[in-house]
Length: 170
Ligand SMILES: [Zn+2]
Ligand SMILES: [Zn+2]
Image (cartoon, rainbow, N blue to C red; front, side, top):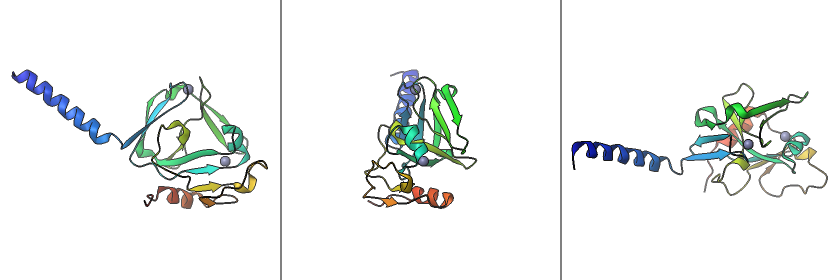
């Protein structure tokens, strides 16, 4: 083998090692049409569902399922310019793919966290939903959740975010 081939093989080896080291550590998410793509490093924080009337309309279902990740662990891979935003008088914001209408991640106010609609991830590493919030305003056709923490409204925001960041004990 000549030196050039050896150095090319070395580059390939390092690249493979990097990809291998990150496999399972980085989660990829995308919208329905896949124009918008993002990735999240490390274990995903715990999941919650919000049963309020606004999340119900936005998701078209009983509740959305989401989490919040530290902004440093989040990266856009594609399509950020294809995101539209709509703001309700209440301050509720909806960020969605302009092409397919899918809800997409967005910054949590001016906090260093990103809100993640977890249905966009192919896998989450979680087996259950950790908490249900605004169950006091759930749809009357929805049964009260029987697992996870159940809140009529929501705990204080920074406290709630901290709860989500705690590692899941097996
Ligand atoms: Zn889309
Ligand atoms: Zn909500």
